[in-house]
Length: 327
Length: 282
Image 1: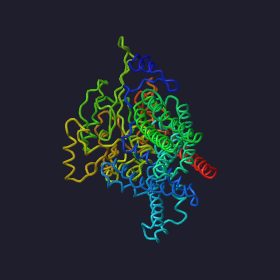
Image 2: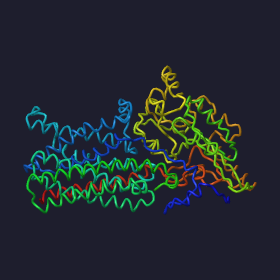
Image 3: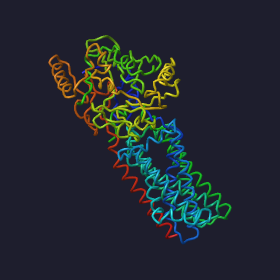
């Protein structure tokens, strides 16, 4: 109806988006509000995945095998340590920490943040009970404390651990941020994979320090599976997100994701782990290899979370993506 | 009774009396003064401390002035959705639906987590950083406001980092008064009242405009789609929603949760089984 020549139209024509229509926007102003989340939330997402993954590993490891028995113990300690630290990191982003208690007023199924808080609390309970059992077995705590952890708390920590590793992905994708919404299946699945891979890496690192070399092979194989799945999911996310994915997969941020997470954080440790399975290296060299693979995996996992949050901010600033929000 | 706003953009003259009345009544601090160069819009957006925002959409020919040239003005506000993304996301229950069917943030319950901010499909609600006055205004009015409210122990002050948005003047409504913006609007572009009555009036307005050759449509008087339902603050527009910085296809974020939880559960189950097999076959 109006044949209008505005700077907006010129801009829209030049932007070269494929699937999103080039629409004149309101002075290029963002339509959505960007997340206020900084390093503390990024760290929480990263450590939360590892913490949950360790809960699963502690359950898979068998009681009657010496190497797995030691793995189970270190996984339980590490998971509990993360469960103790991680809520503090999360609470630090509230500004006034005592207001965390407001979260405990209600349980809201519709809010992943509410469910996540309760999941975290029950996970910490299970993790604490299992650690108490380990300490009672070691004679550090009184023997009766073994009963704090009946047989159910071990699988409970695994189930809640899987939830804690995965809900953060749902928390992101169930928002109005177009990039996150476009990844409604991919982000939760990738969060779980990255959490598992990170848990294998941390457990492998601890096993190397402990000298529990027999178990690192098993952890490395699981890490290869988790890393491979993560890689496939992220590549499929890029394909499925189309132009919604631009803030994450294109430009400098896309380059960082490729080099830091996909190559350094997934492909490189995968290669190192495969070398470990194929060739028997001398022990000191093998320890260096395992350590390097673990650190790279952890590094890639952090960068993945950082990229997700920062790309979410950029996505919120793009009014064209926000006009037609992903289903 | 369900009450709401009907904002008729064809009557808006861009005077910003609604912005000022809202700021005054709700004791909202200044956002500072920034010259944007975007027509007369130096407010730019709704925020935690700006609950009405007048948009100025310039549609002018560059070469010469013609009869088609127009200036669209719209006073934007929280939509008070039937299914509100912010309210569903809120983990503390601070965001409630009150007896007027408005979406209301209880500032003393809000803990500043910021999840509502990313869950609003319209980009309305935002955090107010009371503890960092420099972030809130060039004139330092936030600091003054904070000290004053310290005495009163009222809402926004008592908390640091709290979500803020239009309350549909809950306090005024409980006293039977019209919300400040609608009261101040000199052209009745902002109309307040019973929702059903407003919708009837809005439909009549669209028809009346059509007889005068003006194409207009309602935004949010009915279901806007995406699971959000109708909007308790709806608009009469004469251009596409995007021209006013409104989404043409908004989506209620929580509708993505079933897919997300399923994907996470299947992935975790797959990896757990893989781990179980690797440990037992090794």
